[in-house]
Image 1 (tube, helix red, strand yellow):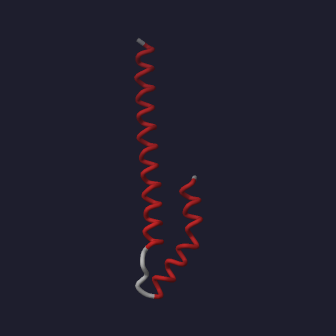
Image 2: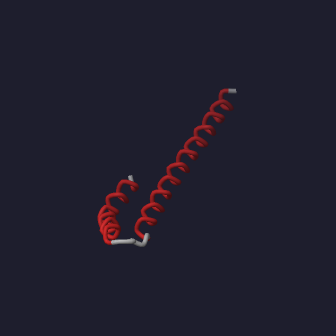
Length: 68
């Protein structure tokens, strides 16, 4: 009886951890897609080009945040 309850709790914990890991992975993927979209966008004027250049300098920091 106790072993069955323990197994049920362990299975629910595994399911919860899997859901959390999937959510975190999806958020990370979305963040990388957003970075990619910004880097591959075509600037319409010099200001947008300057903004993309500035963003490119911040990409390593953004990736480092996503890595942790």
